[in-house]
Length: 128
Image: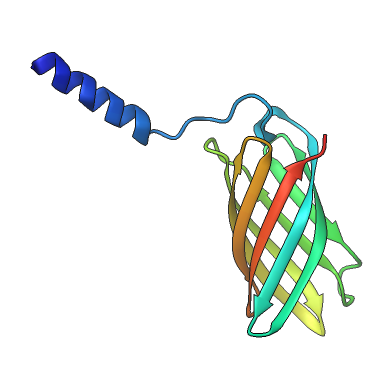
């Protein structure tokens, strides 16, 4: 009976421990990831394509010219479990901040967060 209890405890511990990413994951090095960001609030909705460069554990995206309408940047560091907290800025009439929190699983990245007063989701897949 004692060995069964130890085995059960080991299984629970194993299942509760996040595994580091392996295989074809973002932590394996550089790559291009592309997808779609969708943001909405009430009836106001927009969607736009995004392409991120991942180098090591750094995830970055930038477009436009700082200080001009349409400028946007978003970046974060991927942790050992494949999670990343992205922080960014965008300029539309004035500069504003936004954030997204997401996780890599296999060759897919899913995140959610806020951009101004809009709730957003971001989905990316690995291109290279």
